[in-house]
Image 1 (cartoon, helix red, strand yellow):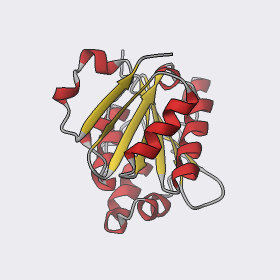
Image 2 (cartoon, one colour):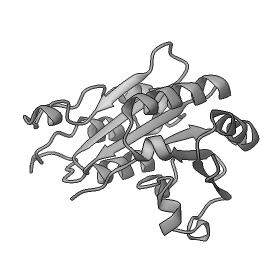
Image 3 (cartoon, one colour):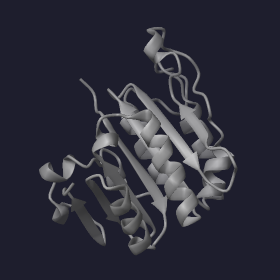
Length: 194
């Protein structure tokens, strides 16, 4: 069985505003920061709620007036992403759109690397990110980018966009297994109260 996780990375150093918004939502959450990004997870994201992933990503982006990237990895076989930025509509990425139809092997959708690198000020990563986003499953031995696991693709995306490496597999429930001191971050908060 592969990895299951979901979180939202927000390009901000305004921890107070972000934490206030999360507390207003009222659900238990976890957040960690590295000085440039804050990564957020909550119980609904841990339960792979795709609608909530998009709602939360767009809400955080709009309220904080910055780019946010929601990520969901299902069984390490599918990577779904929602990019909320200055554009009026979020960009939805799916590494394997036919996965849940039992077909698999389809080309990724929403692989607009230009929009991702622009949103996170990483223009120099355009060519590399395009290859990462466009890599198809099953693995093509001739391809520059090969992903047997979508968490590996997410790790490469984090590297190119400058996100903290620990954003891969970051979950609300996971903080119980990985104490805050194990993160190379400025802070880690877990709010488990209702």
